[in-house]
Length: 167
Image (cartoon, rainbow, N blue to C red; front, side, top):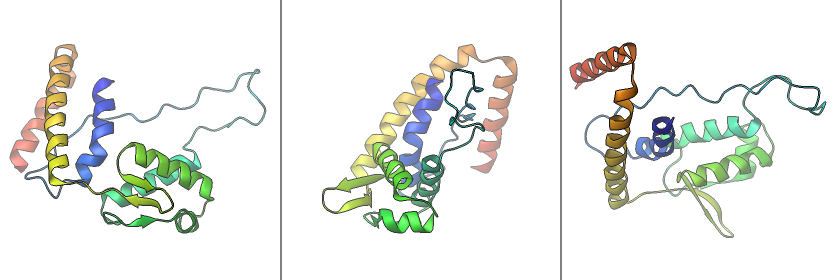
């Protein structure tokens, strides 16, 4: 859905910058994650995956994403492909694929002849992202609420009340 897509795009940056913001981070949509691969048909090659599951690059991406968001890697810290591959018990190819995805999401930067580093964000960038997210989330709520059923509205109300109690 559009809400999940927007949340999944902005959330990594938002979580990374959470210590800069005041107050708790808003809860995002409950993503169901990637759907399993379709069953093999006679036309598929014999070497196609027989069991659905995350690829090596997906697993590396998730591990690096968690490490960056949690602060295990600091802003500007170099990320060496060989070292990461060794730590994650994989080859450099999935590491490179994962780093490219992290770069697309704004969590790492690549510098020519220097490799990948953890991206840092200025206070102005954080404020701009938060303003953009507030605008986007408001529009998404206006679009989504009329389409929600009674059970989903009841669940949303329950979560809002729980959030209010925690604040």
